[in-house]
Image (cartoon, rainbow, N blue to C red; front, top):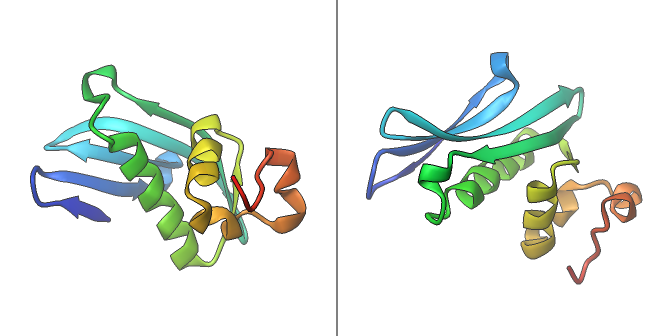
Amino acid sequence: MATSPATDTRVVDVPDRSRFEIRVEREIAGVAEYRRRPGLIAFTHTQLDPRFEGRGLASALIRTALSEARADGVAVLPFCPFVRGYIARHTEYLDLVPSDLRAKFALTEDG
């Protein structure tokens, strides 16, 4: 779980709903849906409530989800275009995508 000191913003994993949620105060601002299998997490869809756009919340959501995947030692399959784009822009997460599958997701070392 990640928390922002400026507002009560939290990213939480909600396994029974197969998603990460970013919450602002007590409201769900966005979600990153996934499917888990042993040793991997496949991100399938990211959605942010339009009222919360422009604050960097979707990026914070994905950054936390990818960091948790790293901490859990699982591979990432970025089927979601937003997650794939985030990894392309932040190549420090590229190693989470299995090297033999990176071409399938159009991900390379140089973005």
